[in-house]
Image (cartoon, rainbow, N blue to C red):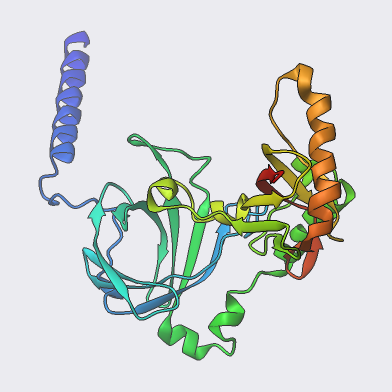
Length: 311
């Protein structure tokens, strides 16, 4: 009886080993990953992005960064995609490489296909740390509708791309927090409609700082509105100076000192000097337009380099 049981056990073991060997080697099923979605059914179809959001469903985050749907894409082959430049007829062609499962690489990004249909599809943009997916940063989802499906809808594409009601409610909450704490940089809210500062006196020169191609490498295009920077020169100042600091621009145009860096023993004296420059020069010599998001003015931050020239 013991011998029989042992033989049965050995036979079962070899059957399992054989099954695993043939399954792993892929015999009888080719090299295709059965979980890999095929782009063949949507080749030649124009898709327009109608919604881009974080994994919580919102298009905005707590600092004012906004996800905006703008892509127009077409899969020209099973392994190629054409992406149109927003607002123009120009396009770029990219090769598609399959990684594993529903993971793909194209347009210098990594993607996961969430769903794929001739009428619509959803892609998840992935952030990689080496060969691993950073799950926290891979939180952007893009919903596309086909051109034919859009033609069947009564709602225009531009309307579909507008913020949703829950986006508006979230923005109102962030705006209220920012405006209730006008002197707090950490409570401020950035905006694509960042504060505009324009000189109204020949004594003050101001220009928005622009970045060259090397400086913007590795930065999000949103950097320019999340951290708007101005270079200011004040002529006939009380003395020569050169300071770098941030400034809060209130919904009413009131200017307040933000953050600056100095040795702790000089913090109070530097605070008085910078506050004086804001109150005496900047508040009086600038036309100020506060930041707005969804039509709501709010407290926001700008970053300044201010030079004073006594002569």
